Amino acid sequence: MIIDAHTHLDDQQFDNDRPAVIERAFASGVEKIINIGAGIGSSERSVKLAQKYKNIYASVGLHPSYFDQYQEKSFNYFSRLEELAKEEKVVAIGEIGLEYFRHNEKLITEQEKVNQQKGFIAQLELAQKLNLPVIIHCRGAKAERGKKYRETSEAYEDILEIINNFSQLKYVFHGFSGRLSFTKKVLLLKNVNFSFTGNITYAKSETEILTVIKTIPLERIIVETDCPYLAPVPKRGKRNEPSYVIYVAEKIAEIKKISKSIVFKKTRENTKNWFNLG
Picture (tube, helix red, strand yellow):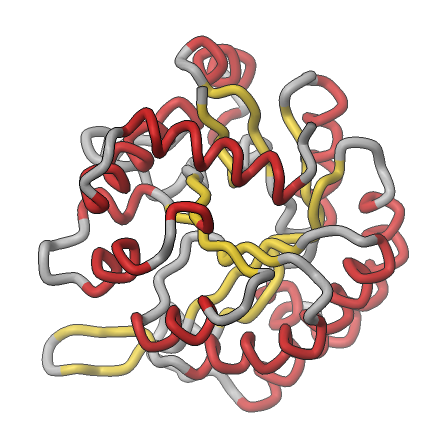
């Protein structure tokens, strides 16, 4: 049995076959699923899914892009967010954090960074108030490096500085892609775990994330799909779904040179304990 710790089953890509996708996941050995809110609408849908299915849980939160789009108006949603966070089977606040990446050629502005940071801190205060763990989204700006692009470290360092002020909370870096130097800093903290998704299955052999996974103890690793995005090999290019989380766990077993049954068991225990799933 295994747990998918980060899904977006409320996404419209599942509108035509959501029950079948969920049934397929449980039939394939997925024991529990955490569905993630990334805005008020998706948080509401996440809570409804958790209410409908016994082994689905919810998180609620405002993605950093919310604060780019709505700026100060984003805080008008906080009373509703708190209501949702108090619902039964809500097990975390997230995904929240910092998103300094831009798909166009523009760079994120200093004011946009400030808006995101204020929104992140306000949601950490909510997590603290309700004693809920936090699911972190973090992506750095792109920096030109020859003909390739690589994330800069600024967003990660800003995240670390902020969460150090909320050291009593538990955190998971979702879809973690931080550098090894940053990973070593975070490993010094006992209240942070790392979650990996399908992109690790098609990482090239020289990619730093493989060394990162080797470095992180299995006791601090969680697996996810982030479906419908980032489908793993051998499903790459298709819509991702929770039943594919096994491929992520198998890749971690390959990288660490241990049996996949150990990875299945330990990541399952880690997720249950971190999110108090029972």
